[in-house]
Structure formats: structure tokens, C-alpha cells
Amino acid sequence: MTHSFTFPVRSGHDHASVSLEECYLFTRQLHVLQRAGVPLLSSLQALQTQVASASFRRVLVDVHHALLEGRKFSQALERHPAVFSPMFVSLIRVGEAGGLLDEVLKELSQLLQWEMDLRHRLKDALQYPCIVLATLSVALLIMAVFVLPRFGQMFQSFHIPLPLQTRILIVLSLFLARYGWLLALILIAAAIGWWRYLSTPAGRFHWDTWKLHLPIVGPAVLQLSMSRFARVTAALTHSGVPILETLALASETTNNRYVQIKLESVRSRIRAGESLATALKREPLFPSVVVQMVATGEETGRLDELLHSVSDYYDDQVNYYVKRLITSLEPALLIVVGLGVLAMASAIFVPMWDLVKIFKQGR
Image (cartoon, rainbow, N blue to C red; front, side, top):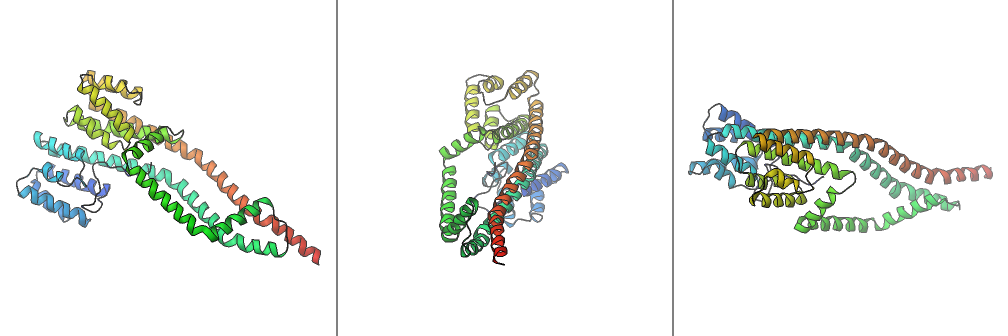
């Protein structure tokens, strides 16, 4: 779940990366200025001086110049697809057509804030296990490369029979000392190859499909995808975007190629005349709670409200699942750390005990 998620903001090669926080602040401030009745040109000119990122400032300058040339705001934003996603531009276009730009900007800022909160929760949940595993790996690596070889030479000089765990660790330490550079090159080459494979459509599809079927991570990945799908679909539906365009834009935010393909099948069925609920029901990927809420929303004309409820439900499920996972990981990590320390300590102190016996016998 570490893959970069492109919500209404993206990064590309034509401009330096624009963070989600920067896009949120811009959208939020622009919403406040539009609600106060400040003209759009004046609002953009004022925001240019408040943006901290030089690359984002250049984007806003270009958008301002495009407006001066007579282009619409959505057309000006569309010139920078590496910064503003199709969903962002589509909502702005709807706001322009209906004279509701301030409301659309409010909806976008709420979506961005929700995504930031979601990322922060996931980051906080994964921070502790990553720190523990990284610390343990560094400690064991230092012991294996720098400490064990010296103890091994000392033990061999006294002809002390070494236990199995000590012999294994000494062999590993000698291998790392001699061929560590080669192992590092192999790992770097493997990482680059894996990254390139994930950059291909087939690699991305296989990876995203595999993530959904993992025994522990899979349910959380599916819940995240459903939450994002429901949240964005609700926002687009509330703004009046047609359902086919809504599904196309919402599928991009799920960050899962397998889910996107399933949503393409749903779009095809809707294009053939089926309702959204019926089309979703034909795909086993979508849980029954999503299908039931969509069906109720279509019958009552409150699809956006019920989809917001679906997103809130899956947000709670993700929070609960992550907390339960971390609670289960803490004792497991303690066991792993304890076993690592025990293995390293026994590999050193058992021969040390024999060395002490030799010294006592020498007296």
C-alpha cells in the first residue's frame, strides 16, 4: 500500500511535484475568496504570492495568463494535467456551467482534506512497525559485519568448538564482508526491475490483483478502494456530473487497476441500459453493503448522501482494521526482536562461556 495515490493532484515531468497539502491549501483559499465575491483573476493573482512552492507558483501564473487570453478556468487548469487531474478539472467545469464554482471548490477541498486525513492515519499506523523492523535490521547487520568476525577470530585462536548458530552467523558475516557489495547490487537491480515491471499495464494489474487476495492486507486494500470510490462518486454525483463520466473519473482514484477494470465493466452495463446498482451487483468484487446503499440511493434520489455514508462506513472499517492489525503486530514484533537478540546473544555468549572455562582451567 505504499504506491503513490493520485487524487485531484498529480506530479509529472513538466513541473516539479506538487504535494497534496499545497493543492488543498490552494483550493481552500480559492473557495474562501470566491465565496467572498472576489473576482477569479484577482483571486489567482493574490494566491500566487502566498504559494510556497516555486513550481506551483509558475503553474498559477500560467493559469492566470490563460484566463487573460480568454480561456475558461477549467481550460486553463486542463493545460496542466500533471498537477490537476481530470476529476479536478471536470468538477471545475461543472461549477462554471452552473455558476456554482464556490460550492464545487468547497467539495474539492473537502475531498482533499479527507484524503490527507486518510494518508496520515495510514502513515501513523505503519510508522511503528517500520521503525522497529528497520532498527532491528540495522542492529543485526552491524553485529554481523563488524562484531561477529572479531569474536570468530578470537574463538578460532583458542580452538573452541563453536555451536551451530555461531557457525551460521560467522559464515553469513564473512559472506557480507566479502560479497556485500554484490548483494547490494543484486538487490538494487531487483528493485529497479520490479519497479519497471509495475510500470507496465500487465505488471500493475497483476500486482493490484495480488494485493486484494492477500490474507491480511487484502481486506484493507479493498476497503480503501471502496471508500475512495464511494467518496468521489458521491461528490461527482452531487455536482451533477453524468454517471458514465463519474465512474470513469472515480475509478482513477481507487489506485487499483483490478478495481478500475471492474468499474469499466460496470460502465459498459450502464451504457447498455442497466442501473448502477444492478451493474454493481453483477460484479462479485463490490460488497453487498455498497450495492444495497446504491440501490436505495437510486430509488430515493439520494445517491450522493448514501454514498457518503458508504465511504464513512469504510473509513471506520479501515481505522478499526488497522488498529486491530497494529495491536496484533506489536506482540509479534516483540517476539521477532526477542528471537533476533536471543540468536545473536547465544551465538556470542555460548562460546564465551567455553572461553571462560579455558581460562579457569589455565589457572
